[in-house]
Amino acid sequence: MLKEVSYYYPILFFVGAYVLTYLTIPKIIKIVEYKNLMDNPNNRSSHVHKTPTLGGASFFYALIFALFFLKGWCNHHEAIYFIPGLTILFIVGLKDDLLVLSPYTKLIAQFISVLFILSNESFTIHSLNGFFGIYEIPIYLYYIVGAFIMVTIINAYNLIDGIDGLAAIVGIVILIIYATIFYMTKEYFYVLISLTLNGCLIAFLKYNLSSNESEEKIFMGDTGSLIAGYIISILTIKFLSLSAEKYDSLPFLMENIPLIAISILIVPLFDTARVFTIRLANKRSPFSADRNHTHHILVDYFKISHQKASFIIGGFNLVFVYLFIILGSESYNFWLATILVATVIILGYFFFIFDYSFRNIKRKIRYRKKVEKAREKGKKILKKKKY
Image 1 (cartoon, rainbow, N blue to C red):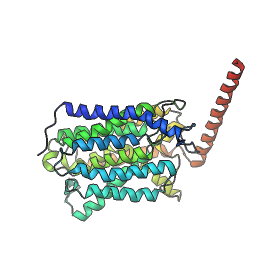
Image 2 (cartoon, rainbow, N blue to C red):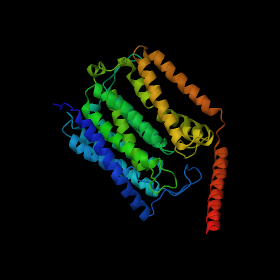
Image 3 (cartoon, rainbow, N blue to C red):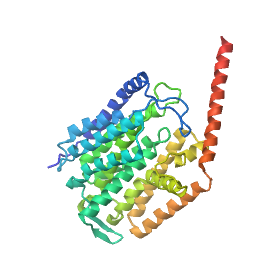
Image 4 (cartoon, one colour):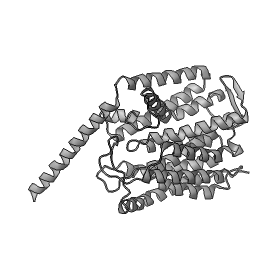
């Protein structure tokens, strides 16, 4: 039997994760600087100075601690099934941040990690509740679709970690929505997991949004983005696998659940679909690196700061979900799907018209780095004149 949640439990888990992350990130920065494990800028980087990475290491042990105390809050021992996948992605993310792994190695690790979750019966998706007339689905299809959904979300979240604050802000928005949904459906284990990771992301945001010259600046790295994406993918699968009785307490039609899930993840999913399409159209691997992401366009083309671009995208995510929940309470999935497709097409065209070619981007980056170097030389000359 599940425990009833008291008002102080959410506060305890959120504050505990926040304090743990906030106090340990400075220690991680010192170790990274001492061992010279800094992230060096290259021709597609958004930063111009060497910056510590591995900030996501703090997410890992905060979540492990939380899972230890949460093991009595679940009927199907879900907490135990989180740990192997988190550990695999932590090790792979850590190695990728230090040595750089191939995308396919990370992909294999992700598939292994999601299998632990899919093997737990509490995540089994038995029905789509009338989504486009689909009700019962066979178990083999659940494994195929479930693995595809989880791996897509993990990679999509990993790919939006390209400018300061974006992955954390989008993650905070998504986790607030999921915490609310699971509170309304009385799935308290997932409420507390959402709040734990949210505490980590909010604490991390303070360091991630520091200026490039700040000694406290740090990146989440693949270590953090893979772990956060993994948790978000688990929450999504759980949302899709809730029973019909649980859905009755939510403010939207049951058959619209898959579309609501897409709307919650609209930012990472749209950006990934758009970037993969561009790369394949240019006859390149979908995993090849470039600066064609939505956030890069806002920063490079519109000259918006990282912080402003991150808050604009995060704000869009929140507003989009709110509108979809309102529409999903009355509109059937055909009209809701039409609105979603129309929105994606309009946004895709909006970013397409800027002729955002890779060569133009490289020229802009070279010019920006020349300006930065010129400024640094100017500062050094002024300092010498003063003395």
